[in-house]
Every structure is written in C-alpha cells, then in structure tokens.
Length: 308
Image (cartoon, rainbow, N blue to C red; front, side, top):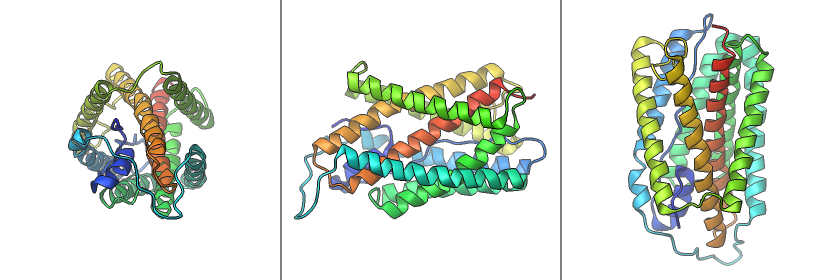
C-alpha cells in the first residue's frame, strides 16, 4: 500500500504496525490595522512553528512496508465508502457550524479574531498530534472536537482575510474560496478515479519532498515573522507580491495533489477490510487537507483583492 502525504491516513494504516504519526499543516494569519496585531501574528507564527516541527517528524513513516489485510473481530463490520461519506459529512458539518459562529463573533468584536484563530489552530494541531501519537484516529470524540476547534480558526481567519479586501465584499471573497476549494477537491477526485495521474511510490516520494520543502520554507518565514511582528517574507504581499503569490500557488498545488494520495489510502483501507470506525480517521485526514487548501486559496484571493 502506498503511503499518504496526510499523516492522519498514515496513522490509520500504521495502527496494525503499532506506529503513529503526529502532524499539522502550516497555517499563518495575516494581521490588519486595528487588530491586536502583535499578539495575533506571534501566536500564528508559534502555531506555524509547532505545525512545522510535527510535520518534520513524518519522514520515517514513508519507509514503512505495505500493510497486511485487517483481521476483523466477531461482529465487526468492514468500512465502506458510505461510512467515509457520512463521517466526513458529519465532521465538516461541525466545522462549518463553528466556523459560522466564530465569524459572527469576530464580526461583532474584532478583538476576538486573534484568540479565536490561535486557539482553533493550535488546539486543532494538538488534537491531530494526540490522534496520531495515541493511534486514536478512529475516535469520533477527537475527530469532532478537532472539527469544532478548526472551525473556530477557519471562521476567525476568514473574517481577518475578508477585512483586507476592498474591491469585493468579504462574503464574496469567502464564497469564492469555498467554491474553489470544492472545485479542486472534485477535480482531484475525478483525476484519481480516471487514473489520469497514477499514485506510484515515485509520485509519493516526490510529493513528500515538495511537502517538506513547503513546510521548511513556511517555518523559516514564520520564524522571521515572529521577530519582525509581520507575516514573514514569503507571506508579505505588500513588500514581496511575486514571492507571496508564487508561494501560495505552490502550497495550493501541494495540497491539491495530496488529495490523490489521500484518496488512494482511503481506497486501500476499504480493500484491506479496515473496520468501519476507521472512517472517522479518513474524515479527519480529509478535513485537515481541506482546511489547509481553503486557507491557502483564501489567502491567494485576498492578495488580488487587497485594499493596500
């Protein structure tokens, strides 16, 4: 079985080998005038550092051999695609509800945007690490708690980005980001199903190398931003617009192609006869990738509609 770039899926397949993997995707905020800029940016940079450190510990997991079929206990039902769909829908439903609440709270009191985004991002990262280290990817309480925390981050960061645009409304910006995220997800699913791009060990290694490169560069930029109270050189659109746009496009590309590995890993779990509760882990992994993709698309769109 090929390894996914998403550590949640790797953790699922590593359970029978008694191995887990922590993970987190880099996420960084973009502070604006009138907000608690110093604390907000430093908090997001610390979140970036924690995410980068966790992601950097995944390399050895890619050297694991393929997993043998699962051994089902009495009365245990095998996972199906319906399980994946329902669990993912439930997880995303919780995320959307909390994201809307977070957005409304930040709209009513902009000073809440910073703490909501920081608590959501770092809290979500901690739960992903607990799920991976503790091999609890199939625990619905952890998965749904992650969705709730990540919803806080998504809602708050969406409000912050919507505050930076001038040519369109914040709602239009968010709607475009959501539609683009859905479009990329569906497009990559079609690519996977049609076999237009085959998931091979070489493809996996190349994508993992790209992921590590993105994390290292983002981490370095975040560390610089931590001392300069800014977004860092790779995210500073005002000073380095070309670099900021290119880096966002690279992040979007890596996230998009990661879906191919995630789909393949979920498919392999079903074929291997994984228990139905493993669908919660699949839902968690897909949600992690979707959130990362959405935030990167939102960031890129905010560049083009920036009020500065």
